[in-house]
Image (tube, rainbow, N blue to C red; front, side, top):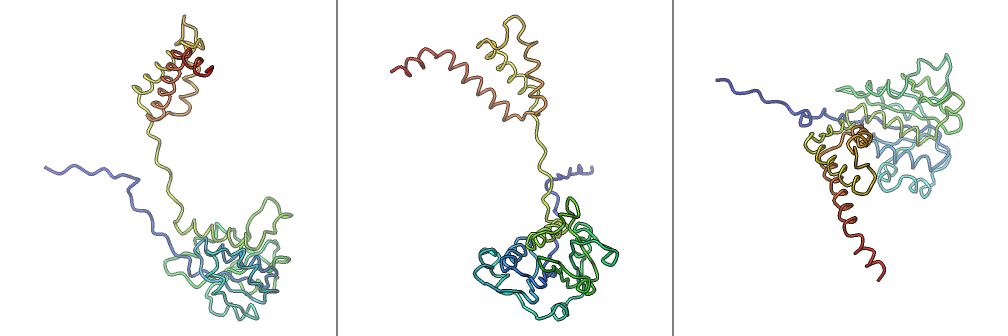
Length: 267
């Protein structure tokens, strides 16, 4: 006799392996504000990216940068590399991805972060440089010639396409995090109360609402239907039914002991 088949539990199924993003470094080309350097270091730490590389920064004010990096981003900031030119900074990388807020025929084809993220997470990924331009202008057309791929973070309209530098790093890192398989699975399904629990709760509700005069004594079940519709939309659980029955018990006790309650308040 063959053994019965084991029913698999979807919640206990193994999660897909989360792919590393350590091979993806962030390159800040000519950043103007040290706060954005620190904020980018924090975003890199938040999203599990690789290293921070800075090219010709206007200012490296450690105090301002570390204030934005916070303790979690401080190791990234402390280990960042600084280069005098973008060309030199990009020499170790096998794939260079540039970011832009501007559209144009000479800048395409342009992908969104969600479109490009999976392609950067192959089983044997290349060493990737994710390049961001200066806050005021972004990467120039000449800068983009170093890049094999171009990414634009979509916004509500082209007139509001410019993003804060550190925020742009965070958005790109977030899309890479999701594409790596780190997004949590769906929440467990709600186990709805059975009819026994529901009917017991409705009996208590009908009794106490009739007692306090909210439902007419002539036909309380008819008027209770509108209240049932409200609860039916919420798909109550067993615990919620027990909670509502507890409320009914407390109301019933309060009604029966109102005189004692009033007497205590008057003392």
